[in-house]
Length: 167
Image (cartoon, rainbow, N blue to C red; front, side):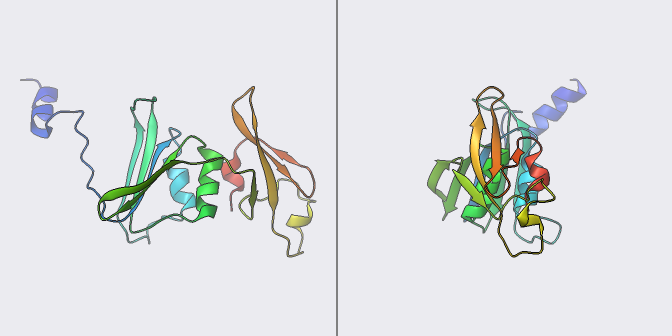
């Protein structure tokens, strides 16, 4: 028996993914491949986070490759969901209570986002000492299939590397 076959026999079917079920929390599924770590950053999950977190990256799925993030004991705020929508607009959100999925919904692209993204224009009023919260209108560029953010204060347009500007 080859080494690979021995390993496979020991671990069972290689398509059998075993991640412990969570009693209460959130599963973010169908995350754009490679974005799971950015999702963790948005959710402020770091070495000090004490709840169980499972991360699967570049897993095959019925809709193609995807990332998955599973967080025990935490439901996301609307601001967190809106932030995730900017980097992974086709993700789905599953709320788990008592080991059951009580809500499953696609993450929706919001019409606007407030206080989530820092404007790229250094001269924008939101980047001054004035206590003004940022606000962007969110649209989609159909040609390149990416989101476009337009600052309501200075009209600056943001299309790429949005994760760099999420606060």
